Image (tube, rainbow, N blue to C red; front, top):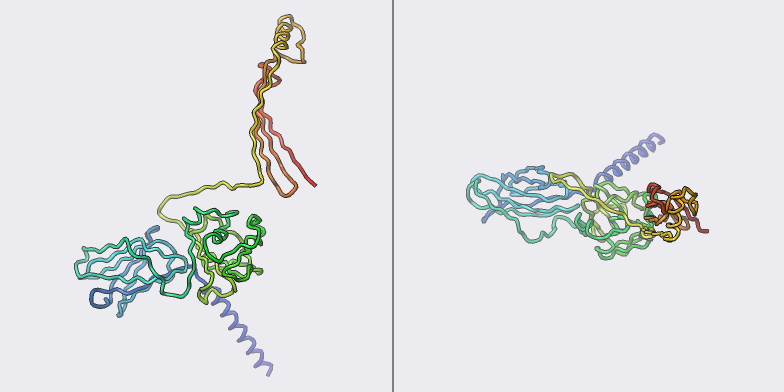
Length: 353
């Protein structure tokens, strides 16, 4: 009896581990493409169908089956060209086919009788309706993420102003790498604000309290699919929504970016000061210098004017503590031409209780 119970427990634990491993591997950010190859009368089997990534020139090939169907699974998000080739038919080519994060689209390829050297190119087509699965969502593409303001460079905050029923409940300005609490307080579709799932390239990086473990840099994101109400059972885990993020990969096009992070509570100042000495004092000092007498005002040369260029930056460290570096460049120190110009760097600290 004990041995039977032990074997039963071991078998149940093994099943649980397999289920957990399968569930962890099932979540995906990749899309897919499928359809049928046809002519004016019926479907065409045995057609060589090629899918080419326009950004990297990486290609995949498949052959349509006896029902004329072709399938490309696990397709990385991007823009593609699909090409169909068969003897006695014109080559069919469609460019600019965009496959987004977890987007599975159906495209039928219609071929015409002719030679392979002849081709049919389709560049402008009506918008595709995704009918291959029940998962829906709003895709925030790279251009959208770059164009719209993102508080603290948090890509998920962009969904607040673009996707209906996405509501921020925390303080969006309080988002730090070591504390994602406020940046993760998002309610999707009226669900709990701490019940969302965060995926990056198919891997969940949601912590035990349903916060994102990190905020990916906007430069590292290709697109984010915000799935509010309807998504496949493969997502699981959360009772709210899903932020399905695709990381940016390389391409054949050279590109770069830069940014300046604003600090609303900081301040910068530029000050120019001009100090003039009375002409009477300068005349007296000139006579004293000619007679070899000590100069008035404890000067070592005749005084006329002094100029100071000052640059300050008031840095807010945290509430009640400010730090201010101060740079000054002094022309004619002590209003004397016989003293070289001077540069001075100083620091000030202010603590309020």
